[in-house]
Amino acid sequence: MLKKITIAVDAMGGDNSPEKIVKGISLHSEEDQNVHYKIFGDLKKIKEVIPKSLTTNSYEIIHTNDEVKSTDSPLSAARSKNSSMWLAVDSVQNKESDIVISAGNTGAFFVIAKLNLEMIENIDKPALAGLWPNKNGINIVLDLGASIDCSEKNLVDFGIMGSALFKALFPKEDPKVAILNIGSEEIKGHEIIKNAFEILNLNRNPNFKFNGYIEGNEIMDGLSNVIITDGFTGNVALKTAEGTANFITSELKKAMTNNLLGKLSSILNINNLNKFKKRLDPRLYDGAILLGLDSAVVKSHGSSDYIGFANSLQLCTKIISGNLIDKIKQSID
Image 1 (cartoon, rainbow, N blue to C red):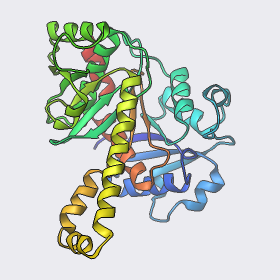
Image 2: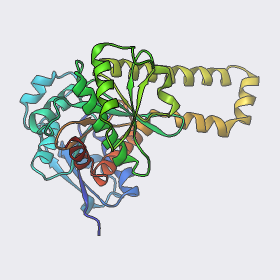
Image 3: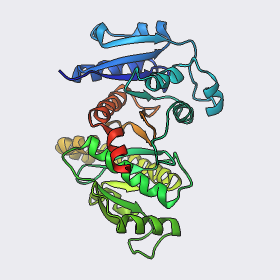
Image 4: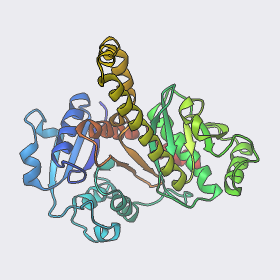
């Protein structure tokens, strides 16, 4: 019998919490009975929204008096060691949980995680990795904002960690790493990018294939599935992609509903439109992973609903089942 995965959940973070958190847990538990949830937060508020369908032996509630608010600064949030966020992270540090997840204040969550959890040996900086759709499946893109200034070693480490994450999530596929750059030619880019290219190109890592440079308009092509960059560039790329996806879906919806011909066309193409909508549904890709720490840390989007949070919980189980931390350590060594 498989050992149960224990997920430490900050129930007080994000919009409509703890209700959406509990509903996400309930939905996830229907699909995966091999998980135990340690739910941190206000006992009274959580109990009010616990559904009868959620079996009592699948979870436990750890009451906390404090919670980290979205308006709190990371440093002020880190001073409260009785918050649901702090105690959820602490549960992982104490080996009481396998992984921690929060939909709360991003800056506070990462500061608390870095204060409580050790860095993996030989990793200098953490990276925030996210899931992006491509023509063939899924990309891992990192860093999305954890480390703004990066050296060539940091970028190389990101490639190693990103490919380990990809292999943990998609064990039947092979990681293909590329560096995000302003051109595909070797002479393009600043010195740090060029140095990272040279290291990855000369010291071929057996755990992934190095595909060289990739431009922003090629990210979705699927020829590479682990895209590495510094946190500044990655965050700009992420927000641009999110904005573009929202623009396309809203304009398509407007075109399909603003006149009779559009409405008839939408009815005739309802199946294709639903497939298109689902492909761009951000809830499918909810959950960013903070890599570089000695324990797994997942951040769910604060504005996502319970379906998005359930998908983040599924990401947690894949990370633990795929032995992500061990894969990173083996690759770094």
